[in-house]
Image (tube, rainbow, N blue to C red):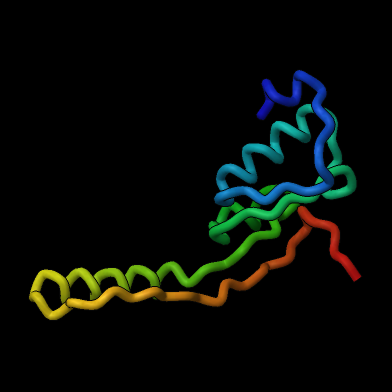
Length: 107
């Protein structure tokens, strides 16, 4: 991100990162290049990792039920091993937006 910012690109007003680690790394590079967060650029991560609320500004993020995913995955794997699983499933979850300081809030 830092190398990219050295080229002085035209940036969007907001970024959504694949995960909180990437978001925090990009936020750091932007701050090092003089951008003010969230005044110049807003950020949203994904995972709601503990680091998302200890960085400055605190990272707005998407919280997903990781423990429930893990439990479901172990159950499905166990069923497959025992030969009890002969169907495909599509599982959807309702993630939660955790609004913190890295994004401007819309009214």
